[in-house]
Amino acid sequence: MEPTARSMKEADNSETVENIPNRDKYFAHNVSYASKMTAVDIEFNDLTYAVPSFRKSKKSRMLLKAISGQFRSGELTAIMGPSGAGKSTLLNVLAGYKCTEISGSININGQPRDMQEFKKMSCYIMQEDLAQPGLTIIEAMFFAADLKLGRKKSQSEKRIAINEILAILGLSETRNTLMERLSGGERKRLIIALELLNNPPVIFLDEPTTGLDELSSFHCIDSLQKLARFGRNVICSIHTPSASVFNKFHNIYIMTAGQCAYRGTPDNMLPFLQGIGLECPKYHNPADFVIEISSGDYGFDPIKQMITRVKKLSILPISRTKYKLELDTQNPKVFWLDQFKTLIERMILQLYRNRNYIYMKISAYIFMGLIIGSLFFNMGNDGSKTMFNFSFCISCIILFLYIPMLSVLLNFPFEIKIIKREYINRWYDLSAYYWALIVINVPLQILFGLIYLSIVYVITGQPLEWYRCIMFCSACFMCSFIGESIGHNIATTFNSVNGIFVGSVIYCIMILAAVQGLGLPTSLSIYRKLFMYSSFVRYGLEALIVAMYGFNRQRLPCPMKEEYCNYSSPKEIFRIIALKNAPNYWVDLLALIIIFIIFKITFYYLLKQRMQPNKTIQILQIIGKSIKNHFNI
Image (cartoon, rainbow, N blue to C red; front, top):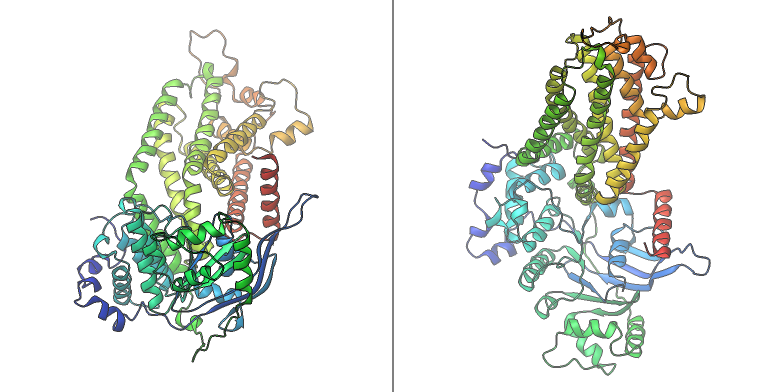
């Protein structure tokens, strides 16, 4: 039977909310898990956000210009405006993902915002509807429940919560559909459903209707309105909603050039515009009309009048009977070990579903094993073919470094985007994901390596002594681990296209450094030796040569027909690689292990900075963007 998340079969057989008669009454009175814990209101005053400029002729660019507003619990709010108006910037600032270069105040329930506490009570749903591939909706929901809720709730309680959420968002009928087969609207609603499992009081969404048709957009916003009706504070940026979608919102916040041009209900917007002499044409979408005005299609005087009138509006304080939040006690942190175990289960299931990828990699290793084995057929024990066997060792290193690195460079940049969404919404600790990735990938690299080595080692006639086999395989495995680690480091920093280019360049430099002095009769200078041993490829090459010809191996037999067989002596082989004596295999292996650990530590650091960059990385990112803009890259 195909592996699935725990209790998924029970979920399929259980009664769903959509099957219950009088659904609306059920939602109004009986939905327990979907109802929010307490009201969370957001208020901001004179909010200003600037991006520093590194050009001498330009000042800091103001993206938000002293704007104020109030987003209430129980309301669905739309932040609207033309492209570049500052919608996403305001959303990011309120959500807490832009915290520097900000002035003004942001209050939560009348108190200054505490970022750590606020992130516990909010979730951020990005514009890209990226979800973990190879999972059905119900499987994805159970994995998310295990990661977010842990042991706080039993499996039956999680099942009830999942059924409620899927019913509210209209996903019950597609619960057993794989992610890849979902429509755009279903995928959007699934991303929302995944974030509702830990019951956040505040939901931020960046362009939730992007890429959807009018019907799918309506269903998506209708689902968000239901969530707001249960008491949540739902805030989303949206570009040009249809009239039916526009009327679903309780609150509208219009932006233009970083300033607020209107804030209020959809019903009051047209009277507000009539007050400055602008009449919406009959049968014209009010949302399109206000976007046209804020874009400057009717001149800039109406925009100035709108901004002036909005600034005169006072923000009334919100009166609530109870503001106490007990999120730490109601949503305790899930144990690290539980997160690690759940991530392992999810990765195993995804590998099982992605069997074609595994089969393709196995086929590639078998194919390369047969090709390389035929090229160096029976040369391992032939004294006249020693130089060719030396080339065989180099080809093994190239294969074990390049193939693992290439597969990571092609796949991991996409996975990074999904990890970022899950991490910023507090699904798991980054270290739990990091170790789960290592535990899954290391056995796979060993499996692929054994398939290749079991073919080429025998075909090429290498010495069948158990300790030499183990030494040869160990060095190859370490090269494979290092190649994969380099791929992770590059893929964390660059996209797929740039990553392949950077990886190839780095790899070529390392190979050129490793082959320094090959065939030279004189010893290398200290500078060339330092350059040579700066390459991890050199340590792998020496380890393989020693495994084949070190440890007092006798002179290799030469065929009778060969008149010249100078390199049958192992000492001559080591002289070729610019060494008087055989290198220490254990030193080379230790060097490979140290390099592997360094690359893994670097990978964790880069991954953490990609998720939540520190000030130094942020400054470097701003400088990089400035350089790109300056040279129009």
